[in-house]
Image (cartoon, rainbow, N blue to C red):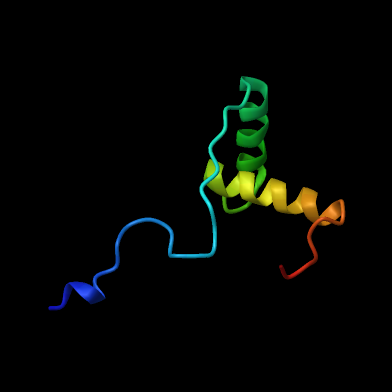
Length: 66
């Protein structure tokens, strides 16, 4: 078997950059509460992506489908 066909762990490759930041405990608690309220209970990382995307869309910085 070729190692070329073996898929690694983690997210599939996408056009993205890694963002790292510190957040105050109340912000983390809010993110976790948001994630818990979602039907699919996303990871903290996915919850942050959704929160940021929703904010960018609602403030006109991102168009739907981008």
